[in-house]
Image 1 (cartoon, rainbow, N blue to C red):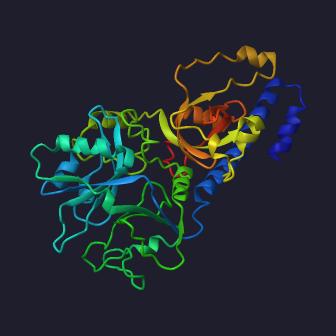
Image 2: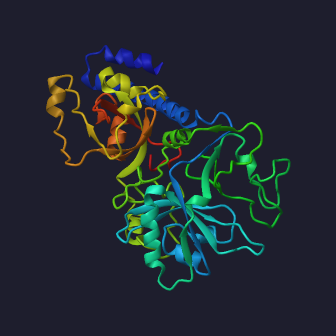
Image 3: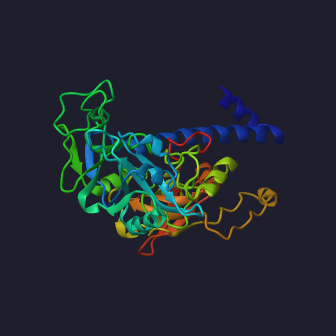
Length: 415
């Protein structure tokens, strides 16, 4: 009824009525587009979770920190609270920072649930293999007189990811241990004992599943029905969910924890006290202004046209991998389309030209990737994809259109 009334008003000569009706049709079109976009985003984020699967996480290293002062030492070296893990149980996400507040490495810290009388002061720090040597030197530099031992244990452990509808049932809770699962699975031995393996529930985004740290060359002991996949399947899943990980996403000496969504992924504790790099992190948090964040994107060939490649939010496994852009490639904004009439051109004010590009690419798989983007450009692209066109250059020189979006698990105020 409202639409028919609006059409009748459009047929009149009253300019004010025509302007009001155009605004109505524009609003309803944006609402439909927003609803369609939300559905497409949720489908992208969950389409790889229909079955129980597991895969080894490649290019990861493990450092071991042990000794009487291990928990206190790590408490002052990274941005999450050791109180969450120093009594055993599952591990947690954390970030090691430079004194200037920039990222040194993102990491997972696991308590090694060993010994009869836990807590046994042994913690395993899982990081990107490219950041291992630098983090090891940094920990040894800050060691001073702390009664701890730090060593490289990468040759002893392998990292695995388990996901799917049945992954949550692999972990029991104290007081309600699970039975009827294979020996060695992730279950509590008793109501007061710690979990059997070194593990954590990956809380960075919904549906990420479990993360296991197992002895090298040992496969996870899982119930029937879990299918092993290649490592790149795990990479594709986290990219579609907008989860950054490793040096391809967290650029050492440059990245800021909040720009890399470490706060959204429960990797920063804002009430823990002093730690290396705290000043910039806390100041950014209390100011409440984060203009750039890592977001997922879809790449499409610019030869197909802006409208075609920017509105088709789907995964293409046949996308040529040689066309994917290398990490830290600039994402630029193409000039907006010309106004429809002269009156609109006169009213349109020239926009301020920024010297810095709207974003930079990060890791990628298939035709999906992550990118550090200015949120204002993401919002403009989502509102008018044909006008706010974003492009980058592939590794082989191919011009690619870039379609970013905000993950559905972000807080409403951030998206």
